[in-house]
Length: 171
Image 1 (cartoon, one colour):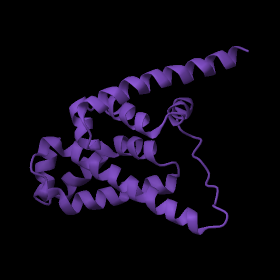
Image 2: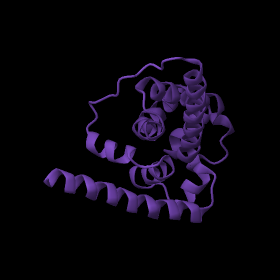
Image 3: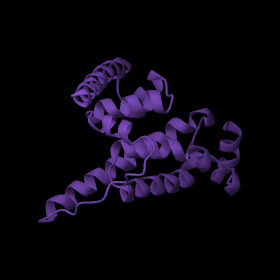
């Protein structure tokens, strides 16, 4: 990936496209952890790709490309959330968007959605994307001990929710 980043920094468009292809699945997962509507997810990813393309030459160390890209994506997701909150307050009756029900891991997604955002995002970055605790702390701009605490609490809450659903199914 480092090689592709270096080529993309020299404005090799094909290398940039290959980079985005490699990262699109993880970008979707991260955006999905923040946003519910498919349109918002697509907007966040599109804006991230544009931001990345415009600023990739400024990336100092190519080995941190994925961390840098994820940080941009999270910021774009937060911008969309803020924008949606403003729109929600302006509308009398908010539109009810349709959720994408064709996800392969729908049950897992529902389980993750039951968690508070602060736990869900950390769990997704750690388990889903394979980031180290130090990298997650950089991405989310928080202390490493906070990340460790949220991982631990998130695991416990996930276990509690899963256990409650399993008990409910047996009845």
